[in-house]
Image (tube, rainbow, N blue to C red; front, side):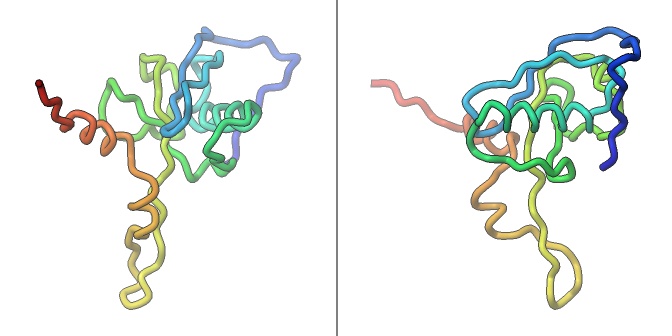
Length: 138
C-alpha cells in the first residue's frame, strides 16, 4: 500500500489530536498525535512503527495489508484504509491482524487457515467470550 508522506517544510493543515490504538495481546495502548486528515492506512503504519520501536510483544511485522483498524464504539466493521481518521469521530481504536487465508487445492477458493483460527482470534470473539464468563457466588 503506497502512502503519501508530507514534507517536513510544509505547514500542517487541519486539527491534530491524540489517539489510542490498542493491539490485541499487547500490554497497553499506543498513543500518538495524528492529523485529522490522515488516512487510516497511515495511522496503521504509524502504529506498527511505534509498536516495533517500543519493542512490544508479540512481534507483529510491518505489512500494512495484514492489519485492520476497528473502532469498537461505532460498530464491528473494520475502517476502510482510504478514509480519513478524523471522519470517524472517535479517538480510541483497536488494531487486529486479518485472518490468514490459504488457497484451497481442490476448489481454488479461499478458506481460513486452521492455524489462524486457533492462534489469533478477533477482538469481537474475545469480547464475546469475556461477556460469557460466569461468576459464581459463594
